[in-house]
Image (cartoon, rainbow, N blue to C red):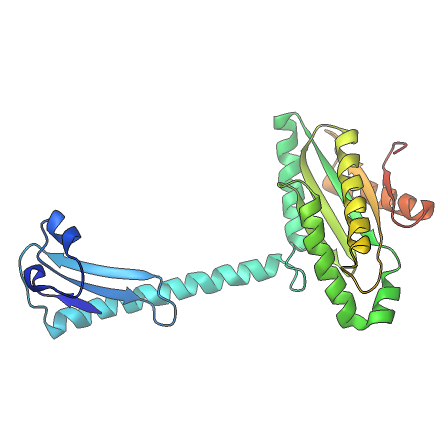
Length: 246
């Protein structure tokens, strides 16, 4: 807490701001203890000695503000934890569904479509058996970071669970653009292996599906899942487009 009874005699800090505003005295009380979120200030246009009662009141106000901010931060943290995967930090299944619903609702208004890419790691059990679950977790964290850089800035990369991830792509013009995103992902995973960033090489099979005006979320997920299994049947590390030759 800083108390300035009269700016004319103040030597600890500049009082130019107070002078400019015609203020002669003031009190500055920090909001927060370990983490300071801001300050509460009270000023007077005349010199003033602030009493213990004045200072106690201001401390009480900052205590109330601090408690409210801590509660807001705690609630925000709980919401974040409920919508994100604790290992990779990616959106989880619940948030992926929300993003997909929002994207599909907005697509008809914008005259675009939504692409859903279901990404399933090939033979990831071998990675876990070879490196242990801790090593497998490390690989997932590296892969998640890499996938975020491979997709477009507005796309959502989410972890559904285990070794299954999904990418929600809004504002997609057509099949060619959706397939191009899948190609970037498979190329990115290949780059990851060539760079030696992982202790064990990995690959991913990707199913690509595109929304249409009659398509529901459940149907789009089913299409992407069907395409993903077709990609796996063709060989590890590839992608397939639902309803098309890609």
